[in-house]
Length: 121
Image (cartoon, rainbow, N blue to C red; front, side):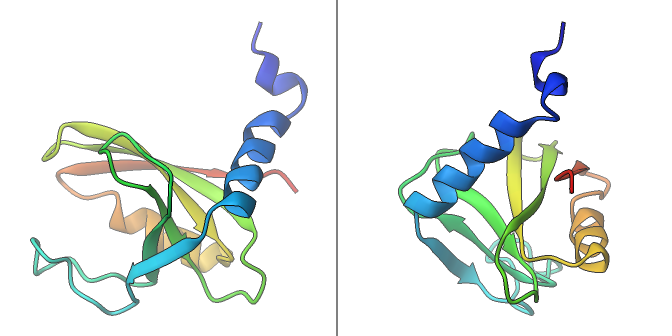
């Protein structure tokens, strides 16, 4: 039995909310900036990490920040990266549906795959 489905993933989302309350969002790649190692990769929105956390790559948990005034967690993207041979979860904060689709497209390339999981209303 999948216990997360019983409460619509409530614990999953609450734990992320706790991390977001406890850790500062650091934007180290503003919208329009270019990836330091991949010059063809331009960030369509602010991108950064949660300070004091760690993800699969050993760095902070990745976050995308959209244009909504409220920086609430609206979705996550689970990624598979065939260049780094890793997987990660990226948090989407304050993103509109259009921004979520644009960010998802950034993670669905020939060498990456992403799956968008929207937070239930």
